Image 1 (cartoon, helix red, strand yellow):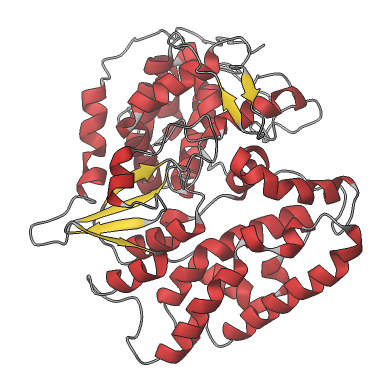
Image 2 (cartoon, rainbow, N blue to C red; image 1 turned 135 degrees about the vertical axis):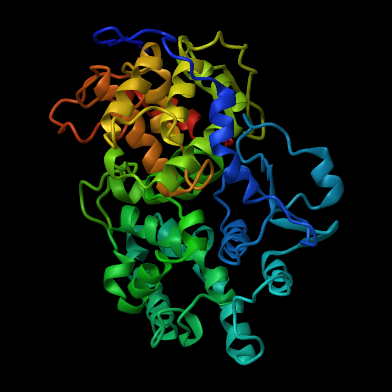
Length: 469
């Protein structure tokens, strides 16, 4: 049972300030304005999966951000989890297959990720050098699907007798990739990303995460040119905006119904200690120390939370409500259906706490001549009722998904701000990210490590698209 502990210290009160959502919205308005189309721009609407797991959507998303294009995003549920809302009828009318990604360019709908990339090249500055490397580029684009995790035989293998051979095949593919990247750091021996890099970014990011966790295989370390490609990507605006944290990929891969079937074989081998070292642990969410978080990243987090607070607050209310999850039924074909959860009462103090957090991230609190700790203390005073273990903000810190909800650096800033608020209000000590129970033997820095065993299913339910920032 989740507990909500208030640790208000020395005079902290529920709304002892004049902070308002209107003030915060004014602070974050430039973030939204930077995405709004200008007169004469091609109006771009990007349709992506609501959970931001799809590597094909990642290609297009990376290109949009890398090119600095202004666009609107529409999130589409894929129904991989029967608890998700149905796919919007309006989208199926637009794209009869219901597949993502898609873009609308001044109303013209374009589907298929590689086709979309080619069309985007005609808008703004091109990513690549035109037709100079057409033959090589086309060959690399055709080969990109070979690195999709969903079709990876080694990753999905459940037979110990086949493990060595499948690993050899996988390593050979990576050696081929490493050769393609020689002279880079990017594909085609270029010094900046092209369409080819966009085509590979989603596949290689997910492959590196999953090989590291399930197979104990460090792609970046074992293949120097691939490692150099990832390092160079870290400096690119498109990658920073769309990078997926390893912790989010692993929660998705292991807990969500649409991904778990791919992960079952991997976890079976893990239990038998085949093909990977013992003791691999879930990657921890990234947390930026509040005093070191870049103001732009903090502002991006505030903008995302502020824009979607009408979705965030009901989500936090559902997580705060005590009681069993809605019952599930399984039909003769094995299809799982979940009963609709009844509306949850508002989570105590959640609105005040979310407002205080967004104000802190947006720079609205006085910072005592640059002392960001003083700003965190002021924010903690505004959100004291929702800062304890298992409380709304602790839950939010544990369930932010990247890039689903916000860029990875923004998420790290948000978690760091929440941690600073909790410390300022007197909350301390390592706890389970879901229920707030102490995690014995963990250092204080591991405040949001893996969930305890009794909370795994609950975290799985939190890792769906219900936040949808």
